[in-house]
Image (cartoon, rainbow, N blue to C red; front, side):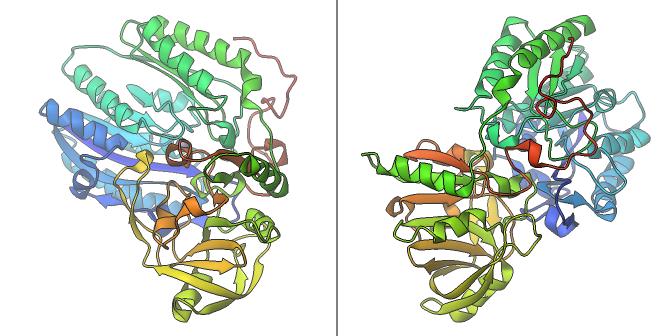
Length: 499
Ligand SMILES: [Zn+2]
């Protein structure tokens, strides 16, 4: 059996003032051809799960390319470039392949392309026709539509945020595809769209309110003997008609079974929709609350996560809202990782360890995430080349490079500055690489909404989310929506829905 595989994913924040070229899309790395297998085998990602099943079932994989990240709206030429690499391989092997197993994201948008997933699948179908089976995996933040569902033979979304179950989704997709090709099973997919916009900062499925939906869907899958059942949170920061929550069920019994269970699961979610609404604290409110927790007897640091500038949701990673508040709290030992500011990172490297740096720090990408902070004679405490290997289970053992990085000391505040990456803080490595022992700080601050929890939750004394102005705010009422279908909860809190 021969199966085409690969990964093409983008979580597009359409409120960004920037545009995303291929260099930005692939900032955390990308693979082409056989590199895809070498890059992902033995890791914990979607493709790793697909490879795992392929090895066990003696399936020959034909890899295309892989790239996945969040960011601003994709340029059309960028999509065409990546798509060209995929379609070239499919075209070359179209007469010998038995199926396609692909990791998509579900919230991609580009210039002139409303839905990257629909565009991708239509391009694939254009070469292989309607009969060849195609199965896909989806991110929890996928904005699904019937159009995408109808282009596939099965879709398998992850359930956890932090995204620690990508491997299992990849395994399931490849397993079902192989079963379908060998005619061991038939699969029926159902999709119910809910007019429900869930702020990503409230999406924590391990200890937050969304745990209820994940736990329920996993038990529901067992109880109803479904192949899969997923409550996709959706990604409201991609302001498109397909934005919002979706319920996906996959049955190996009948279409009716899939449809009925999807509606039942959708009813449960809708009845509990108020669980998707939460608080939004200013930077000052968050710091005050964190200091209260720090003041309670007990060991450990308190984490403040600046969720409104979470580059994992397409923000610039140079917002100054939280940093400004930390600098006003001199005497409190705090550290923030990190601000993406090439100019200051390179100035720190030019000054050297023990040197001083002056200039404007942060808030250079746009005017939506605070104002640049003027630093004078900030002390260069440590430097790094930025090469790391992730500790987080979300991207376990994968390589990453933050570029030339520095730890600057400004009074009692340490701030990590990096040259070339707008990526969220997943684990302790952005601190370790610049010699910081986070156990020695009162407040440890990160730019992330939830993925940081996979590493920090069990280690921190407490966690507080800060939500200064930014395009991944927890308060959706602050965003200038134009394209989402109304009414939608919570923008229209009194709306009614019959399911
Ligand atoms: Zn996601």
